[in-house]
Image (cartoon, helix red, strand yellow):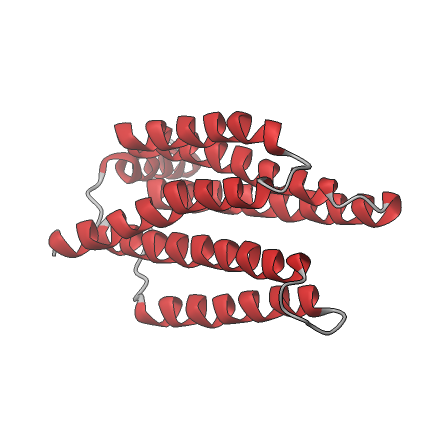
Amino acid sequence: MTTDTQQSLKDDLAFLRSLVEPEDWRTPLWTFGAIYVAIGLAITAQIAGLEVVNSGVVPLPKGAGLMVIVVVWSVYAIVQHLIGRRVQRGPANLRARVSSAAVIGMTFPHLTMLAVFAITAWRFHDAMFMELAGLTFCALQGGMWIVLCAVRRERWFALEGAAWLVATLAAAPSLGTEAFGGVLAAIVLALMVAPGLYMIPVARRAD
C-alpha cells in the first residue's frame, strides 16, 4: 500500500468520523436563535418605521425613510457583534460547517436579489419591487430550513421550512396593498422571532 493510498484512507476515515462524532449543539443553537430574534425584530422595526414615515401622521424631514433603515440595521449590527463576542467558538464538525454554509447560502443570494429589486424599483419608480424582495427573503428562508433539516434531522426544521414557503404564497395577494407591511411583519414575528425565542432557552436548558 502506497503512502498516497494510506493518506487517502485516513482522509476518508476522518470524513466519516466527522459525520457521526458527537457535537456540542448548544452553542450554535443559542447563537442561531439569538441572531434569528435580532434579525426578526430589526425587520419588524424597519417595517413599522417605514409605515410611520409613509403615513405622514408625523411630520418628518425628507429622507426619513432612509434614516430609519440606517438606524435599524446599525443597531442590529451592534447586537450581532455582542452576540458574536459572547460565543466561544470551538472546532466545528462537518454538520456544523454544512449548517453554516446553508445560512450563508441563503444570505448572499438574498442580498443579491435585494440589490436587483432596489435597482429595478428605482428604474421603474415602483416600490412594489421592494415588496417582492420581502417575499424572496421568505422563500429563501424556507429553502434554508429544508437544508438544515436534511443535516440535523429535526422534524420541526422541516415544518419551519414548509411554513415559510406557505407564508410566501399566502402573502402574495397582499402585494401592492397597504396591508402588505403588516402581513410581512406578522410572518417575521411568527416564523423568526418566535422560533428564535424558543431556541434560546432550549440551548440553556441543555447545559
